[in-house]
Image (cartoon, rainbow, N blue to C red; front, top):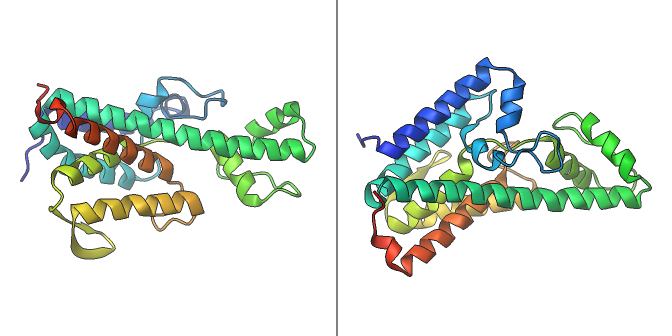
Length: 250
């Protein structure tokens, strides 16, 4: 069995502690650590980091899948790179994922906001309505598509949590370092080489993010996954072109 490397071990412990704390403490802790839209009153700049240690409180599978992937794909990378280089990569991918997620949310929020202005709503009225929309619900406005209004509301009042963005960066790095390693999808128990498996997984997330049709279930920040993968690819491409690729940062 693959050993648990130093950085992986500490990341696992911190994630588990945050998950337990979210179960035991009131919602204020969850709201403070999750990543909110910048115009939401719950937003804090630290959330670009802390959201990576938070997971869905209602299901243990979210944290289990992320922690398993972190261990399975991150351990060989840390063994090659050293602890500090691995942590730099991990947090860069996670923060990059949060930035992409926030940019997509901003686009969707502005699209809905401008549509409501065009429908006759004033900025003050919109500001009054936003906090009253329950998470997962949206306003129906005549002349504006439900999809636009749904994206508008979800961008504002549903926070992002989870290590998935950072893990997708790790997946990309693993695929570039071990392209011929054979992996299996849960719903397709046939070995697929990492150089095919990981691009397919990212493409599915991109498809789900663009169309809103997800085979993985609802409530998933697909563009955060794509963002983590993108930042992971950029860092690997940069390291490949210079001396940092082969250097350990112990």
